[in-house]
Image 1 (cartoon, helix red, strand yellow):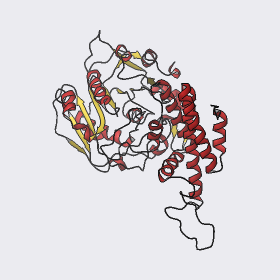
Image 2 (spheres, rainbow, N blue to C red):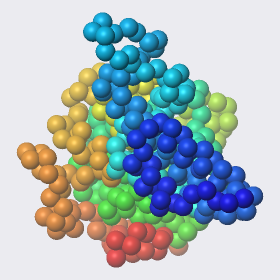
Image 3 (spheres, rainbow, N blue to C red):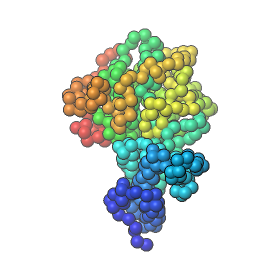
Image 4 (cartoon, rainbow, N blue to C red):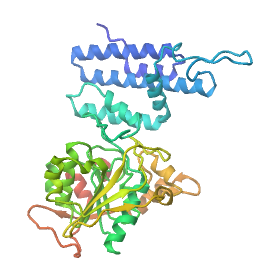
Length: 424
C-alpha cells in the first residue's frame, strides 16, 4: 500500500482548498494513511493522519461559514428566492451531515491560534500515551463546548480534561466565601495544581502575589511548573503553601486530587466541582466521612464551563459549587453565593485577557489600548510573581499558619519536577 500523502503538502493543500470535494478527498486520504499506519505500526504517521483529518474538518467548517455569511447556505429545507437569484445550497447537496456541519463550524469558530494550540496539545498527548490510537475524543472535546450539557455526562478517559473556570467564579470564592469566613485574615500563598492556561491562577494573583501555577501539561503559561500533582516525584519537592485552590480533574482523579490537597495545604483547600459530586456512598467513605467540608458554597446562578476555552457569553445546564476545607475548624452551615456575581465580578478587560491562549497576565495588558506590553511587563512580573515558597518534605513538619515560612526559590521547585525551560 502506498502512503497517499505527505504531511507538509497536505497542510498547505487543505489551507488552500476551495471546494468541499477537495476537503473530502483529503479526509479520505487521511483515513487511508491512518489504516496504513496502524498496519505498519508507525505511530508518528498515525498522529500525522489524525491531524490531517482535523485540518480537513477545520477547512470544511471555514467553507460552510463563508457560505452562511454570503447567504448561500440554506438553514433547514431549501427556500425559494423571490428576486430570482441562485437558490441557497443545502447540506444534503453538499453531502454533509448535520452533525458534521455543526462540529466543523465550531472548529472554524475557534480561530487559527486556538486551533493550532489544540492540535499541539493533542499531538503531545498522543505521543505521551502510546496506548491511545485516536484523538477523536481529545480533539472533539475542546471543540464541542460544554463540560456537561447535563449533569450525567462523563468525560472520555483519553480526554485532556481541560475546562477553564470563568474568572468571576474564582473572584466569588475570594470575595463571597473566603473573605467573609476568614474575617480579614491575610491570604498569603496559593497553589493551583491544575492551572491550564491560567484562568484561575491569574485571578488568584489579583488577591495575593504568591501564587504557584502548575499542571501535568505545559500550556505555555509563563512561570508554570510542569508536573503531575498526583505523581510521586512531587512528593519530595512540594511547595509549602497556605491554600490549594483548583478545578480538579474528572472521575476518580478528583477524589485523589482533593485528598492530596487536604493533606498538603497548610491552611485550607477550595475545590470547584459539580453539585452532583456531593453524592455517592463511595465518595462519602473516601472523603466526606473523615474530611467533611468546612463550607459548601452554592452558586445561585449557573457557572458556564466550556472545554478548551472560556466563552464569556456561554451557558450551561450544570450546577457547580465551591467546597472549602479549613484545617482545624468545624463544618459550618452551607451558604449561597448570591445572584448577580457574573455581572458584578466580571471586569472590563476579562474578555480580552481570559480568552487569550494562554491567559494574558494583568500587568502585561493595557486596557486603554488593548495591547499586550510583554517586554515592559516582564520586569514587573519578576517583582510581583511568587519568587519564593517554603519547601515541605516528609522530614520536616509543617510550620504553623501564623509563622513566616522558610524561603526557597520557585525556580528550584520547577526544575526539580521537570518544569518548563523558560523557568531557568
